[in-house]
Structures are given as C-alpha cells and as structure tokens.
Image (cartoon, rainbow, N blue to C red; front, side, top):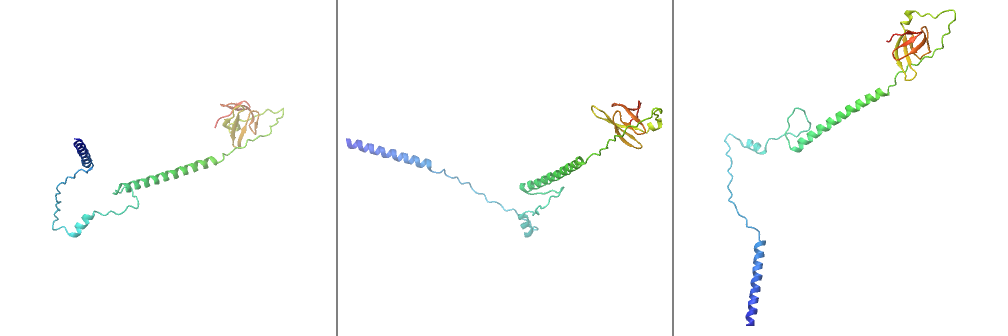
Amino acid sequence: MQNKKLWLMASLLVIVILGTGAGVYMYSRPAPVTKHPVTPVQEKSVPASFSKEQSKTADQGTRVEPITEFRPGTVYSGTLGEVTSIQAGRDINKAAFEYKQYQLKLKELDDKLSEKPVIVPSLSLPPVTHTQGQPQAISTESRSRLVVMSVKGAGTLTATLRSRSGTYTVKVGDTVPGFGTVSSITRETVTINNSPLPWL
C-alpha cells in the first residue's frame, strides 16, 4: 500500500514536470512563417524599333551635369541636399553683400562727422570815437547793405551780420565799422543806432 502511494506520487510528479516542460517549449518556440505564393514578374515587351543602346540609356536614366555655379532664372533638379546647399550659398552671398553696403554707409557717415565745421572768427573791433561837434550820420544806402544772418545764444545773444566788406559776429554795445553801434539784439530784430536791420 505504501509502495502504491510512492509510485503514484512519483508518477504524478513526472507528469507535472513533463507538462511544465511542454508548456515552456510551446511558448518559447517562434511563430510559424506562412509562405505566400510568388507571382512571376512579366517583362515589358520592347518594340523592334527600340535599339539595345537606347534601352541601356533608358535603364541608366538621364545624366545631369553637376551644379557648380548658381545662375538665377535657371531651373535645377537635384537632391534635397544639393538644393539646400545652393539656397544656403545664395543666402550667405546676399548677407555678405548687405554687410558690405552697411560698412560703406557707416564709413560715409564717419567721414561726414569727422569733417570739422567752418568757424567764422568773431571780430572784436575797437570802439569808434566820435567828436562832440559832429552828429553820427549813417546813410540809408549803406545801412541797407548790412543784413542779419542769424541770432544765437541763450543768455547773452550774439548776432551774425553780413555786409559787402565781410561778416561780423557782434553783441550789444559792439561797433560795426561804417555802420554804428549795436543798440539791441532780440530773436526777432537787431538794431544799430536804434534802426532795425533787415534779415537775409
């Protein structure tokens, strides 16, 4: 009886081991490959007038010369890399051209700024002394030849006057030779001996 139990347990253990091994084998095995029937490719019929040389060139395709220079208005065919490199080269050349233009403009501006403005020296003339017995007479003809060019300054104003004999920069109290003493200077009028001068 005891031998039967041992034999039954041993056989049960062998069945479990074999079942486990079979299960592992079935799941680890690759899936079967199903084969599809292969259909033969039919060759295209070539007309009799089509020579062997023409068929060789047709098989090889159309030969395109490599692109060495980009010419605007010309249509090119090529790979994406070739087209991209052409466009990149064009963009780089355009940027370099614009950079040179900006450099030239900057140089012109620097040259204009470096030019020194012409400074008209102010003339300080000694005051004219008049004798007591002679009144100071200025003819209207000579006064009309003296004109006001500009009035400058913030606190003390100075006027730039011009006559046939030259240009004068004066302030109130200065004397213009042949015309008289500057009586007043405002932004609107310059008077010599209480007579306003015309503007240029």
